[in-house]
Length: 92
Image (cartoon, rainbow, N blue to C red; front, top):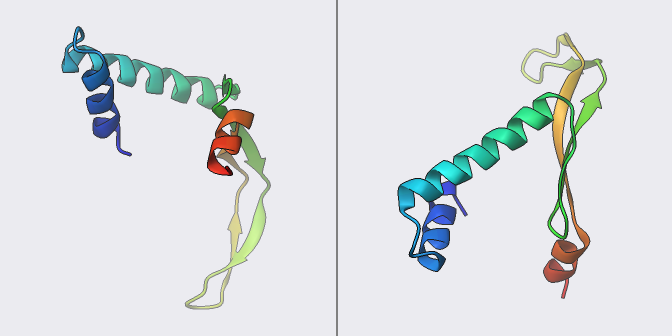
């Protein structure tokens, strides 16, 4: 599902809200999730799951084309863990 499909589904269930208002709400929610994760915070939606940031240590990798070694610095990686309700719905 894309963001525009999500907005359309919300609009279909809430005819009292305009599509522009729903789009603003979705954008604000996503922006706040991104800001929180950028600050290293965990974002949790009970029953759905939790977004967190994991640290990946620096490592040495190989260029598959040339075989040369490359140094890759440490990085922050976004991580999602499904909540109990979501996990149960997926594995009925």
